[in-house]
Length: 584
Image (cartoon, rainbow, N blue to C red; front, side, top):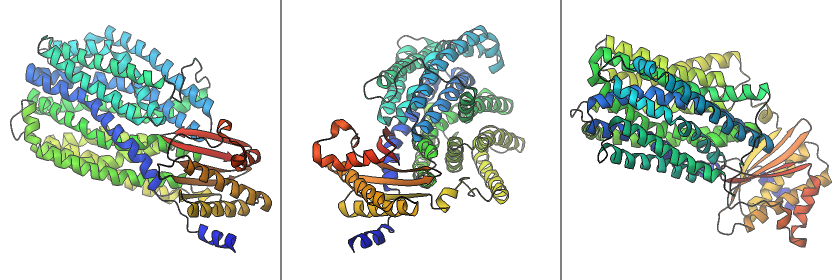
């Protein structure tokens, strides 16, 4: 009778987002602070140079942004591609492959940094002439570019700890690293521009030194005893793996490349329409826009490691819940940011040495445009991680460059404020996506309409997902639900009983080892082909219940029993939580 009651109750167990929300929110603030600190370099350079050197210096920094973005293209292409593939490998229990991808990121970034510096310095004159048609400002542009290119190595390498520390669940360290970079840049800017009077070259040098210190600190943490990644000489050798890295890294690289083209195009159009004063105003707008990326890009990046692992596991239910959580949280953050920058428009203008009232409408347009921008960013990040790379690249191409350039040209031609393009480019991209994905779903009904998920496993009953509170009653319910699933998927009845009781003991043991934490579990059971298994993800301290060093005699007989029943038992700690994979 008790067993029947348990089985009836087990049907009430469903997956919720409580556990997932905890994990996401732990990553969110450090990730937002990381991107915020990264963009402080641009902001402080702009403000301090504008105050110290004037509008010519401010325009020169704006014109030099494409060189910085080229370095971002190189770093983001190599590191995001390897990092996302590494997170997928972790989801598929391929630890050796994830290490090999980490080594590949390091060695390829070292080679690319040396090559970029050499080519950039050799062509620094022509590059400066291309970026700046005004001969009066060109010497400032060349000086800033020269120092930036000398510092290409840390500016490219810093992407490695930025991505891999997050996969390791150490997002607080990422935030500290980026705060060191931002705070160091401010301190060195003040030192080099004022007491030492080094001019625009001092601003560039401050950015390089601060980035180098932060990069060294990030690698120090990646090499300590708590890291899941270790230095080595192995790297990717097969053509297939390089194609996967290139495909996965292409959206991030394309975004930075198109940001470069966007800056060139916008600067050229604004110079044509309003001269250097309008370019200087755009420099201020662009710096605040960079701060908005702490929300627009920070929210999706906080979820990237989790989405990568869910993609490797083909866990559509968790991925869909995470996307919804990203949008809810992101829209709230957008609202807070929008109110702040709209109210501070005059103060921002004054900080950049611009007339009061000159940025009010620009801040309104930037604020409104953040909401569709967040939707585009969440979608492009999701599509990239889940293998729909063409959709990700199409969103980025339209949003970052095509829609922006076309809407700005139309606004200037019609005599409208140029700042309208900050709204129109984002809204037009989202509208085009909605139209395109609706057409695609009609032709391919096997995919879900918006997220393009293959839910055949869920619909056929081959996988189940549910969440469990870490108390005796709910753990018993979870054991009953797992037993039902195993029975429905042709497991021997005697094995079902032993297995469900052992699972119950494992979960109870995890709760006992975390007396100060309200432990919650996300459980996934799957039966695909000949493979059948259970994935249990739980928060709390790092604890492997199947570590033989933790066994203490008869009290662990159930765990030893379940170990003997399994083909493979894998414990991992990823994105700051524990995961046990049991393959029958």
